[in-house]
Length: 397
Ligand code: AMP
Ligand code: MG
Image 1: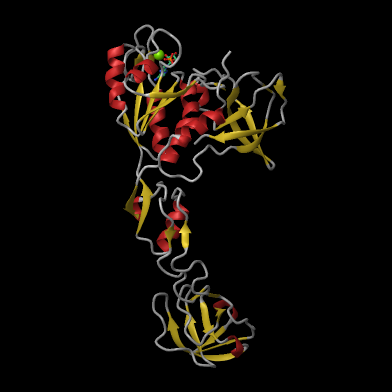
Image 2: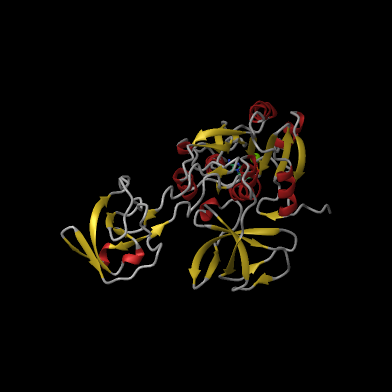
């Protein structure tokens, strides 16, 4: 029997064929969820000036404890017109510019105010409650490195450091095609033998969450002509994803028609359950994924192979799925030949993530899968993994 590729081998073959898409410059406000193509650098020191960490009074630490005249009131965005002289205090708000001559801020809670003077028993260190200029970053320093996907915290950091525009990887263009004469859209009546098409919508959502622009073609019937026309359109994309028609049945046309249209197949079938008949090939720079039709297999195949490829097209530094540690809540039967991805729900128990496999693991049971928030990796082997065994899992968004 031929030896099937492992998940890792298959993923390595996919990633080896990805060519990162060219970068484009976009305003920072349009960069959420995009992947930085160049290091994002600070335009200014941050903070750009010594600023107060507290509401209080700017002073010379050496002048405390004691009573000091308040010679000016500094608001945020309005620096004092002159330096602070020895023996003086200036009122200051959080974020206000600490005046030259002052080396500390005594917080308002520690002072007594009387008219235009302020007194305190407190002693204070030089530098106390003063945020030094450049304490967070310096102009020219890397704020967010290339290859990072920009989430809320990264966008905030770049904005604070004065970046107006960033270079990001172009969004991959993805096309989704579902195949099968039996497929109907929700809302249409079902004739005998028909089912509702669900992979298209799932894949569209998965692709968008990975950062792609997505076009969905109408589902095609299992004829060569219908496949040929739709596949020819799909091959214009950066990523073309089909479902169904990649097994060994007489109506499984996808691989044959793709080959006819110039797709070079890299692999077909992986030692994986569900999702064994995954196919992958390329035509030029287009990445071509043939996922199985069973909805759970399609969902799993996407997470293992397509999402990493879409990540890599955008230039993400670590495109591969990131597995997390957990523990099995029950015994799980192993498969001697194929790694299983078991749908499970997670629960936090002490410091452990407990992984509870759902009942109903068959690859057509997409409704059961809706309760899962984890794909647990069950390595090949004999017998069962007992409850409590450590296991790695892929979180499902
Ligand atoms: P196939 O891989 O084409 O043999 O399909 C395997 C199983 O998945 C069959 O039961 C199909 O009816 C079902 N299936 C295929 N495509 C879809 C789809 N887009 N949505 C829901 N079920 C599908
Ligand atoms: Mg089919």
